[in-house]
Length: 302
Image (cartoon, rainbow, N blue to C red; front, side, top):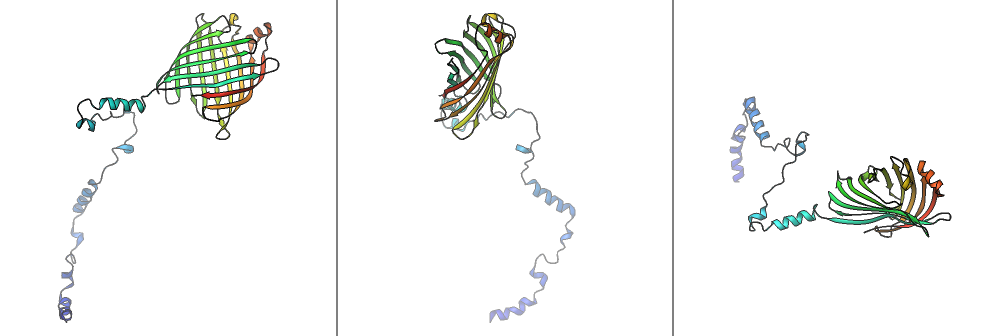
């Protein structure tokens, strides 16, 4: 009954009184007021154009790392220094080591079986390392025909390439020689492992070497590795039976099975050939100029 009584009163109230904004001409607000309101709303939004990827490209140095460590507010002065030094060593400032023989094999060839090795060891960090290299070959019942050791400082040029400086000593063939060494080692595009070096002996002889190999994965454990090595000389070295130019080259193809990543037996084929004046020296000495060998060996690292 009360609702029926109030209904005529509600109908009697003007429509404009029911809506406080009814009848107001919103267009009466000037354009300036509307623009001022819009600018105020936009100014409240964060500006991303002056930070992060919104910055224009340039070559300015990176900002310094923060030096205010929150833990220093809680612990006594110097209490966190040792912890930060340990963190630095364990995350980018640590030392590591590896010993790897890419080649450690027996070479089976017609009437003159032999052996060969090619290995490397290094100790250090991401930037600076001490690197030891060795390689050589020989024949059963005849002894070692060639053997060398290199001691090198290895410094990182970028994440993929190292420059190497040091010394090389040849034990065989005699007479022995010592060389100053400068070279490079790294990972070329498409995952080719590449090494190169120049050698200056204590007698003024200049030699060079370039080698490369590539690991082609057939399965997760079966890997095919083509490999090439080329040696060069700037002049004749008759005492060591070396001629100028390209002295010798080796091309090989080896298939290994990784029982573990660190231990992989392999089989393959290797072709060695002496060239130029070096081949002439070999003929005079009654040695073979070229040889093709079936190889059986182990690739190992730890």
